[in-house]
Length: 154
Image (cartoon, rainbow, N blue to C red; front, top):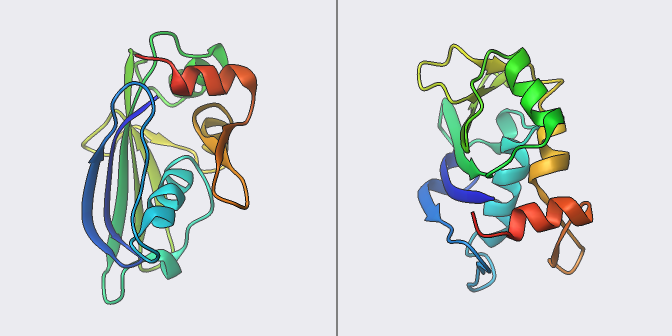
């Protein structure tokens, strides 16, 4: 379950932090207020392609940080994190940095930036942690078990 999201220098977002509580959380606001940008930021954090074009105008670097909490992580993800040298606990902090050169890196549980996930393996995170989104904006889990994990109190 996503518990915290921070986005800086992405699209029109200069800096925003959102805390999520167990249960239903809704993003509401007027057209153009940035709701879709927050959802897009989560998909980029979880491995969606992101180049320099997503950066806020004039910025050299942008980043997205998310705190995910699950009482029991799926074995597939435990293996992914362990391969990257990341210790798996109930809480995982993911950070994605995107530079103006178009290069981006994803880090897990490592503020120093030493535990980097290989970009080609990062999309495996999305299939397990990310809710899907329909054309009308409704969210749904990619699988029933993923939906339960995302929506469960934890």
